[in-house]
Image (tube, rainbow, N blue to C red; front, side):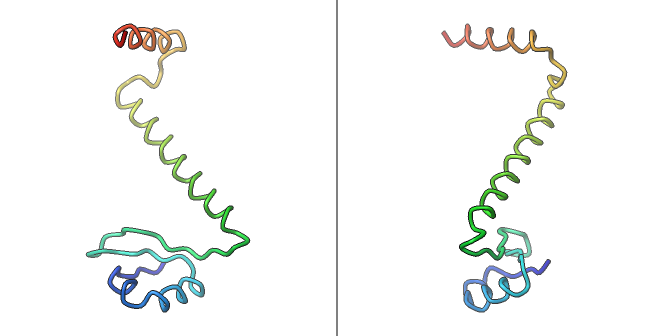
Length: 94
């Protein structure tokens, strides 16, 4: 995967977009660190491309939730224990 500095994107956006169209996905960097991803799309594939990005973000969120639950040792609670926790929180808010 090709990398491109944000300065180059700012200075030559048209040339960068041509490279994306021909070479495919590129990673935009700032000070050598990845900041964004440029990927080719079209009017025909835009909705599908955006859905794929949303699904990818959702998968990452679920993975992070599961990791947090495992770290907090609550990943093996039964449904009854979960419901008790919910009730306790609701009572504390009232």
